[in-house]
Length: 219
Image 1 (spheres, rainbow, N blue to C red):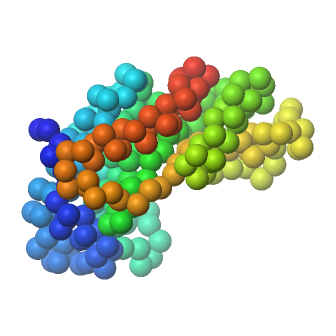
Image 2: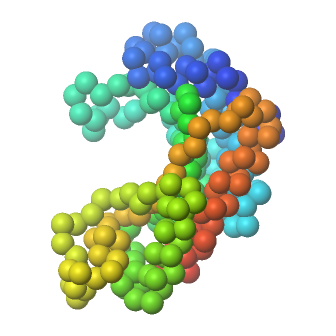
Image 3: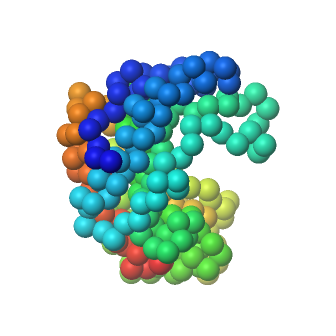
């Protein structure tokens, strides 16, 4: 399946999804599948092919479901998400591999690079960030902040871990227990056309230096 664009009517429905019950969602399910989730699988495959990385795309794993698992959600959480989330990763295991994300809501698209940390990966992260390699990563993050308005996200411990000093120049990075750098842009007029794939690929390409740093130092 080639990516021919999203159905703008399906994209517009994303704003309404958190307020829908199961019956209302069922009435729109066919439109969302044909105009959003199926094209989403084609989009992430197309974008992955355009990037200079050996990325894996698996339809059932690369397109997140539109419903939430409410077993672990706070009381009153909406059943349905207000966004479509797409992922591609480089490595044998999605959970422990450097990853790219594309997040589409009714008015914006978000782009991210990062990975989750097992205890072993967390230790490698701290060694790399605390040493000379960390200067390279910090420079890339500064570039992305200046050029794209990017921010770093991830859970963190309260204190800088030993043996690093509390005033280490990359103290905030050292405290992380997972890592993602991300930015958001308004949706372009090309959302309903094949050209949207190239627009997305250009933005993920800006994150390639961080992705490669993760591969070199953590994978």
